[in-house]
Amino acid sequence: MLGQHFRLMATLILCIGLTTAACTSSDGKTTTSTVGDLTVNEPVKAGTLAKDFPPEVPLIEGQIGESYALENADVTTWTVDIAVTDAETSFNEGMAALENAGFTKGFSSFDNESGGASIWENENYSVIFNVSQNDSGDTVAGYVITTLAN
Image 1 (cartoon, rainbow, N blue to C red):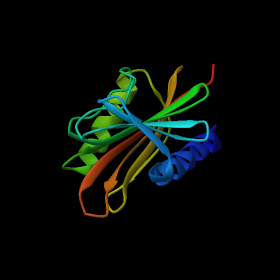
Image 2 (image 1 turned 90 degrees about the vertical axis):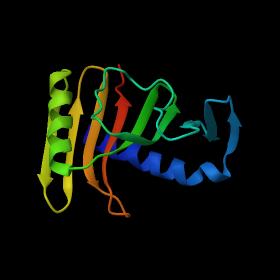
Image 3 (image 1 turned 135 degrees about the vertical axis):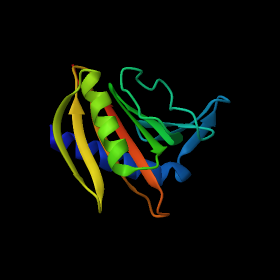
Image 4 (image 1 turned 45 degrees about the horizontal axis):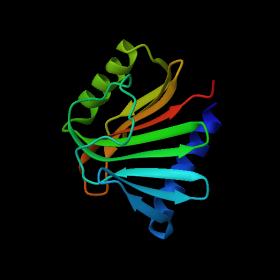
């Protein structure tokens, strides 16, 4: 299962890099790009969640940055970045919220130098949750949520 998560993350990275060369259309709320049979729905502005973001995945408080939805056959992956002020507090709050929402933790790790990462799952979704500093030195919480095959 862990290998599937990393393949999806690699697909996400590849897709984001290719969207500038992709066919794009807009409905006024989202911009849709297609690369092969992978569809990426991007919000037009920061502060909004991607199309059909799953409400059962709790998010920590903070300013929503970029959020994407990637659709491929029967699997959808959503991403969201949230600006936060304290890595350790935000990581602990995010993990507690996921646990309280019924997600089961598969892995977690935190250190003050690099931040934290964790993997969660319930019957519908897998969630990769991390908190770290970006290239600008800002502390950001990131979520990668993927539908599970039924």
